[in-house]
Image (cartoon, rainbow, N blue to C red; front, top):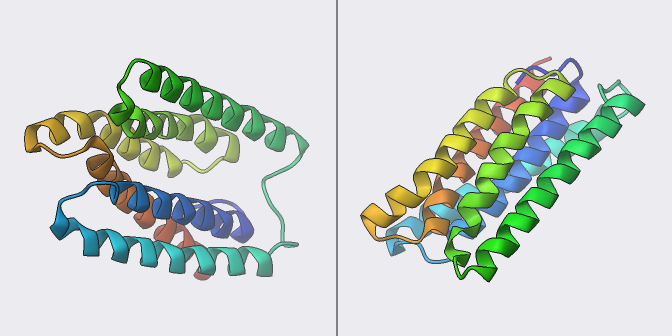
Length: 177
């Protein structure tokens, strides 16, 4: 991750690690028993990266950011569309009695939304995170069915580490400037 400003790299680490914790948590809905400790460790590591990212962003809060009025507005629109698509899709899946597909759907929406985010924030490396999360979302359901696992366990176990590694790399980038 190579944002122009240290604050942005640290904030990206905080955001990605926060959501890594969420995905590790969602994976704990009904995973195989042997997955519980790795998922818990992933959550703890993500929490530590989150703390580091928040503290570093706070320390560099006045040093500059890519967020100006135009970037903030564009980012808000992207996130608004993401939330609407995730919510509408989740509602439709629940209504159609396919609630087990909500987590892969949300992962798909998250992965896809990272592409315009990467452009608006001018952080090309976020494209890789977007590709990996999107691929994870698309492979989770067939993999879950083949292994007789819940889709939430599989998608969370795939997306959590992707976001954790992305967060850790962003934090490392911020720390080494």
